[in-house]
Length: 100
Image 1 (cartoon, one colour):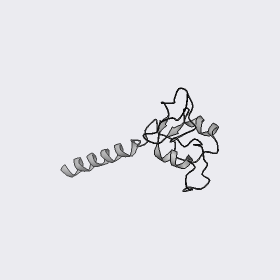
Image 2 (tube, rainbow, N blue to C red; image 1 turned 120 degrees about the vertical axis):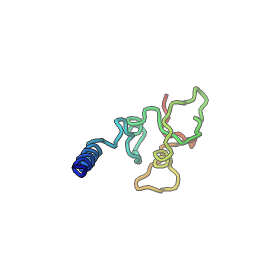
Image 3 (cartoon, one colour; image 1 turned 90 degrees about the vertical axis):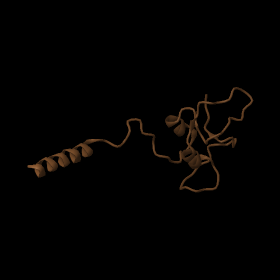
Image 4 (cartoon, one colour; image 1 turned 90 degrees about the horizontal axis):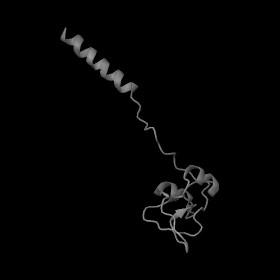
């Protein structure tokens, strides 16, 4: 009788783990190199930058960009580390395709 209870409990636990999804509802898109700023701004509306970056401008600076070092590395125009990498940070301030 005890074996049946343990077996039933382990099967119920296994069924519970199989039905639970591990992907969060607001999962971020996978990092990639975008062809131009229009494509990048569709996913990241105010641009993407590395941690600690500051907008280099004479007017009001952009502060609400997405901080993601990996996506920035794909689009910074530095030494080519990835296939089809484009330079989308033309002013080299640490933020690619910044937009207010």
